[in-house]
Length: 326
Image (cartoon, rainbow, N blue to C red; front, top):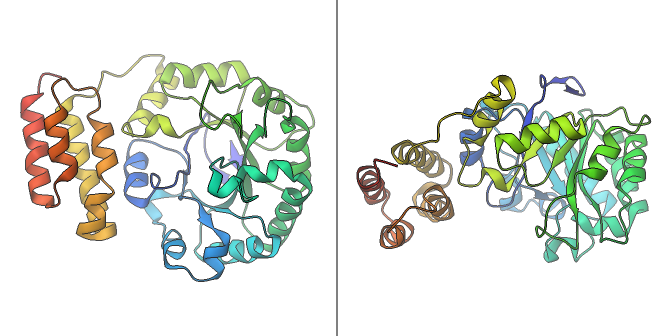
């Protein structure tokens, strides 16, 4: 599979852009475990053209995570186009347009999935950006706004006509948010439409290697994208790729192995964000890494309230010792 001139191999597995999740420290882990394509957290086009520090910081990418895309969102064609040009200067492998984020502060203001209610504007933004940059442009969107409005089959052709190099489809509507089950039926219809010649990436509810294989086999997608399924489980990329290649499941990762992973993640986070922010933003990851351990509540509270990185490492070592048989 290729996006533009980016060679991604057979049945690649992508790591989804997620706010406060797909930062450089977690992307690095996911890459180490075999993710084939990375994306930044989504970047506000308005923030970027105003030189907002948080938005500019998200443009930082490393060579070890390539191929990597920068994802932007917004609803103003001129702002989106200018933001895309600034992203291109950061030298990503591609630019991805976020037409799928369902959260109220984005979709409710007409950006992200909000553009599913204004498809002419979505297409205008897409055309302008494709014409303005010299690297591949891709789109991530949803089936539609709600159960009565699912235009994705026709929309995919319209976006392709705008010149995009690939399309990721999340199998839910905006109204669903992340509730219910993702419906891959329409994703399959897009992929198997004879008028579609760009790569189609399926997204939604890929949480196990078996599900990943099922989505490839049943719907014929060119790639799958893992989002929430990687939270607390970055090794899922290794598990999926091993299963796709061999048909066998890898042994479950042990708690001591999770501890070593968490230490590495903490190290990356501290290097990237400093001690204060680095520790604070690791807390949600710590909770997810050790979710489900018996009698873990008191240890979890210590782990997610401690501010000293050295003490956190000591607590992690205690976890490895106490739950070494798991």
